[in-house]
Length: 322
Image (cartoon, rainbow, N blue to C red; front, side, top):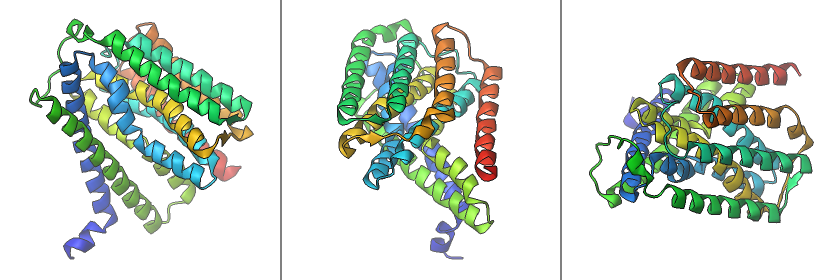
């Protein structure tokens, strides 16, 4: 078998995808920690902003393409599904590895931001659309919050233990590592999805399973990769900040941008039922625990992951049997 044929092999694509995801996650985490140190802000803030924006790029690409093809349900459903995956699967996995009690400075502020962004999304869902003015308002809120979070966090990094990083103390190198990590993560997600979809076709796995698992999970792979690396390196600030920031970015940044570009987004009435309430319950529950300074330990993390898998199974059976 030639090298080209090997690279076209679905299992090889899956393997390359995983390698790129983990390598990219390492680059983003180490770059983010060094940026936080150089700017004298807590790693949580960098995870909530720079890392969260980078790992949310796949969701943004999907949402913009969906609006361009007049498929607003994909844009809305992608954000709802991604937020549930971020909280239950990604954060749950981090907590299983022991990073749920190491978020650090700013956790209350960012938890409140998640709750408020979710409430705003719920209001738009029941209104039936996100008008252009609503999208612009969401973007203004996002930028204003980032500015507020930076001002309130600047100089507070000294209150925390410096997080270890092998990256030299060079801000340009840290920025390069973060950007390079983002590129590797995005390309790794593409390889992994292509390979997994090919394997599904080869072994005649129903397309419903592929859509509900691989496609829904695909845009959350960057967050999962970054969070796994951060958790394994005991860098809880980046891990928790990435999840909270991604959920806020998904709602305010992605849907706001898609609404402005697409001249508004119509929201189907079907989202008023199960899906939006799953987002409300999962996001609010975790945010409330963080606000109450409760430790989200390995047992709770395992329960969150099991709950996500159960939710995916329910979606599959309700689709195939309904």
